[in-house]
Image (cartoon, rainbow, N blue to C red; front, side, top):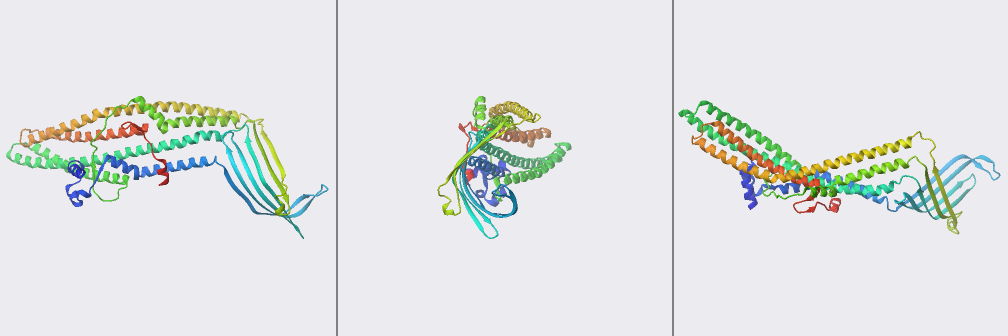
Length: 501
């Protein structure tokens, strides 16, 4: 009930929602939203929040796919069948060759298990398979089977670029960066929600101000007409009040239109589809606490995606240099395998008394003349690394400077809010006194009344503007450091909740 009474008070004094509209729906059916509730709704259902969830899910499955690439990979390959009919040169038993018509049908199946070795960049495999060969002649058909009960081997580049080694360093950093970016995006959604909240709240305040000014100038104009008839005021003063009334009428229409526009934007961002009247409750408490600049910078370096991005980009640049230095140079690849094999005319005999099978090969590549291509690639990679290093160093300076300024701005907010609140109180009191003095005839200068009214309106808007600045700076600071300095804990989230929902 306290929330209802607070809401009704704000409804009549700040929100601009008319008393008749509340009576139409009932006070209990009006939707009262505080700043914390608006932020929560935005982080749950706003378009930005949903986009951020899907973006994180994509990063999660990309990282899962990368990790799966380092797990044993089992595949089954088969050819059922491979039929060939051709005329080929056949070598006879005496060494001569002749062209003969050939009809062949091959069947094969192989089960293999492969494992990447990230440390060396090689690959180990274990394989078993069975093949069948059918030879079709004019008057007969022969059939043979070839079995490989097991075969184990490896393939190892000796001097080549090891992409696995670099990926094992970089990809986990990418995923950690994606997690931090998601938390930062949540804080950015909070900042956007704050902007929509105060835009609507300011529209409500301005609409209420416009209506109050309209009522005040209507009263003053009617009083002034009577005074003019009695000859107590000049005609130009009456005309000035009439002009003020016309302006106030126009301001009400403009304020109503601006309010409806802000309300539509507010509901659209929070995905509110009902016609229930909305009453915004301004935050009553604005916690103030001191933040050490060095502590804020340290938290930003440790927690944020930007701090991790600096390190990742340098690693990627070093990886490109390593690849350029090894690509197009002397290279060698060692392939070796050992297994058992046997052939027979009957499938029942193909696994009897298998024979050893060993294979080993060493392939080398020696560049003789490349006209400086390898050297050019190395120089480009080194230049790119130096460019990234320079950019990262400058971005670190700018990043730390932005945090320093944000901490300084936040530290000023307590005094700024106090000044804005005091100015609002003083301006309201001055306007009330000036209006009463004018109505009893002690103030005859309508311009003095206009100035008091303008100062009062600006002071009220200035207070809510200062309130908006405070909360914007507060959540900007959270986003830049991923740390809650009020409650002293690092911002985080439960990863499984985003993946499973």
